[in-house]
Length: 292
Image (cartoon, rainbow, N blue to C red; front, side, top):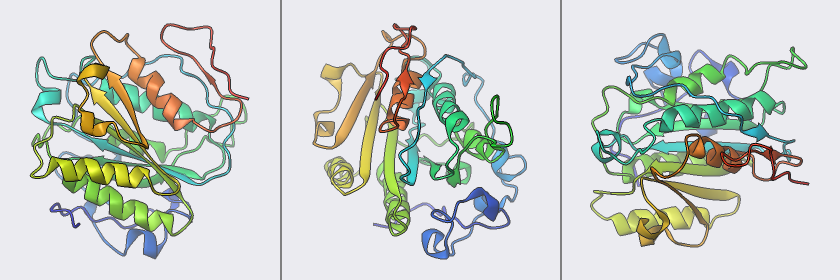
């Protein structure tokens, strides 16, 4: 299925952002856009590094734990982000009003620990393609052996992980999912595992929502593919039952959850399989959850 949105990516003038497993002509298909080439566009300053932001999108900080040591598998984490009115409006289903800030924190914490250069993040907004970010490798600055900082390329990812002020507010997941499916197919040819993370209240207005849920489940059933559905504003008993399928990890998030709950949950997903990781939960600051 081809997306109705014209969001086409290439390495452009910044090939240093992408590791070989992610930056090949086959992977990016020779496609072009102002986004990937670093050109200026509406709502952006200096290409990928800037984005118009919503005043309700704060930066946050919580201790999330130790990410552990990677398993050597090249991975792509693809974030599919719902900016529809049912999520972003006053009284909407982003109960903490900080989903982007907590997502940025989880990604940054992983990047601070990553040294392998084999993990990448892509960002796909449901309806504002010019704010998307193609696969960008995240890893710490290895020239700083102890108090190193994330590489400069991480700023491109963090720039995309913000509330677009010009979001049209579509509640249709299918176009963004089609983009993700095509991207995952390309990176899969290079031996890259993929993990799609969808942040939404899943109040979909797609023409055929059953097909969308079936495609999510089908993706999760493929080798080296995972799906995490973060159900914003939904207690477990109110999550759309069509998400309860094998392979889809559902993470409900409600107003009853403490601040930082989303960051901790996402960090747990991003670090799954890493040896020696130590997770800190909002209610367990001592850092239980160490993996062997």
